[in-house]
Image (cartoon, rainbow, N blue to C red; front, top):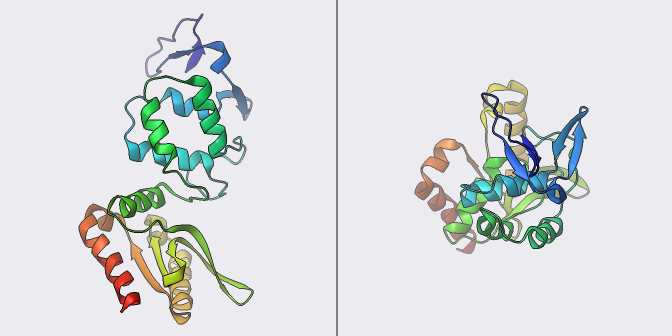
Length: 215
């Protein structure tokens, strides 16, 4: 809970209170509840964030996706330039260095935290930057929108969360989608949390797919 610097922090059990300068308290209303705007919230929580956590949060703020887990459609629209401008206005605050570094790695159109994690893992391991949410067309017909892709190599990287496993309809749709992509000559690399836990093996799979296109 945020209060102006002139106020007292709430001391209710289970509530963390923070004080902000009045000029930094930009409020919006969601379901008639006053909430701090997304960028100010990010900056105020920056202390202690890892780079991955910071990039994930920024990606979630930037996305215009309607299916990003846990996001409300009534949230304010934010751009990279908006965040950079606010960084200049706020100047120094705990965790500002992490936010500046993370902003350079952020991407628009991400649809889940695991897409961010996968993309950063690939980047950290020296792989080329993949395209986020690439639209694969067959003529004028949309075949798929891939999580991550190397379009010039026709390689798609797809993260499969539990929803892909527990929903029979989603499972059938995923299989049909993969068949359609493969029919167009795409290599589809599907991964789960287990693959992210074994990053070396995952990166070898992706490198192998890239190498197969160069053979």
